[in-house]
Length: 237
Image (tube, rainbow, N blue to C red; front, side):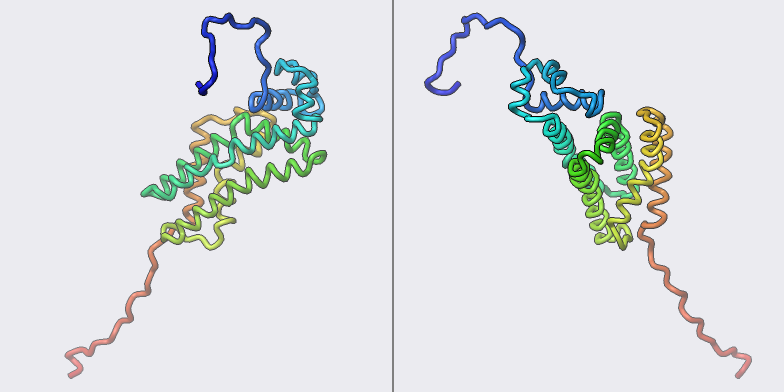
């Protein structure tokens, strides 16, 4: 407790309705509303009611539904800003690149194919024409940022002589799409979030890693055999 303040622990608590939500909790409530009802189906009245705050309080923090939507997407991106960092570092620290890629493949599937991420991608895509700058920021600070981090990791592995990659950025994109491309396409186009079993996803990851390494695995150089020198036969003497 700060010096110069006192608090009577015996004083009765004030009764009334519980305090309203603000900050990160308010953004989470707004995100749930946008995901459930879409941008057009969501109202500031409904968000204020769910957050147990007045409309005046909500508008003081976010003057319009547009600014609230932008804040929701920005907060979502911020939450996953460095989510891939410990997993790419583990790939560098591990003894086996193949095992590390398998683990990373599982992480990518669990993250990108999760219901919350699929729902947010669908929301941002649906509103991209109306809010192109929000969609561009989502792409740059989420998808592109993680791809750059993976490309840097692949470049480092190449420098260490553990992979043989000429263009790490293209290789990073190839790896990600080998792992999540087909499931992501099907889940987004069908609007489902649980169309793949864990066994099926593991098989896709396994085949993706094998395909990736068949292209980029560092192999020992093959040297031509030494030339055969002719030896004179003793019968010629």
